[in-house]
Image (cartoon, rainbow, N blue to C red; front, side):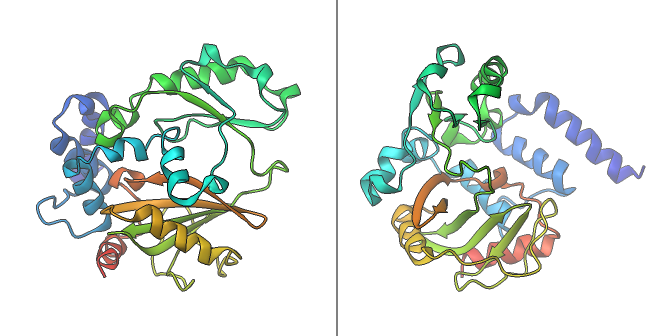
Amino acid sequence: MSLSATYNRVLEFVFRKVGRYLPDKLFFSLHYRSVFGKSPDLKHPRTFNEKIINLILNERDPLLNILVDKHRVKKYVADLIGEEYIVPTIGLWDSADEIDFDSLPDQFILKCNHDSGSAVICMDKSSFDFEEARSSLARSLARVYSFGKEWAYKDVPRKILAEPILNPDGSHLDDYRFFCRDGEPKFVYVSTAGHINFLSLDWKFLPVGRTDFPPQDTLPEKPSRYEDMLRVARILAKGLKFVRVDLYQVGEQVFFGELTLYPSGGMMPFRNAGEDLALGEFMDS
């Protein structure tokens, strides 16, 4: 193993063991170094990831605390675009022990309001492991999201919410994520089954990709409610320096997913450094 690779492995070990105790700027510098093998330029951010980290370190608008809360954001969004875009909450609890499974339909999704990746999906209650679901959600509820370093998440009152399944047949639900800068969508990131595509607003491939999800060989189909999605994204992004507006389409109905302030925590794995730089410049165009 080369000296550089050994150094990066040591940095990764230090980050995982003591990262949560480090000052924020040092934390993100070490994390970035452990992921990309180089230090970020936080004084003069140019790449997409550097700009996201800059927002994490410097933006302190109290509204952001509501925007990242999967429970409280629903009212905020409904007041702006209408209740018809909101996936209803069919259960809300302060702890996993309080979950009332008897009150839930045969299919549902459970997730924490303060994190990412905690979702537990039930497609059939007759074969669902209720105790494993409680244990998984209890662990997620206790977790400090991103070691508490992403400021907007720090004071979110933690809860577990239940929602209906939007795709009851179990098919993949395409996710349309509009990256917005200063209130305007700049590009859309489309997540389809096993693929992630970066597209311009006029629905053409951008020369950008991730190392962990390959793009499709052909353009994904543009949703029939695409123009409505753009309208919604503009409304929800208004007044914000940066936000990613996540939307779904089920039949002819558009549903709000969430507002994401810090995609990948500023550690998005682009295929090369040039793409990270190009997307950073594209966001300012």
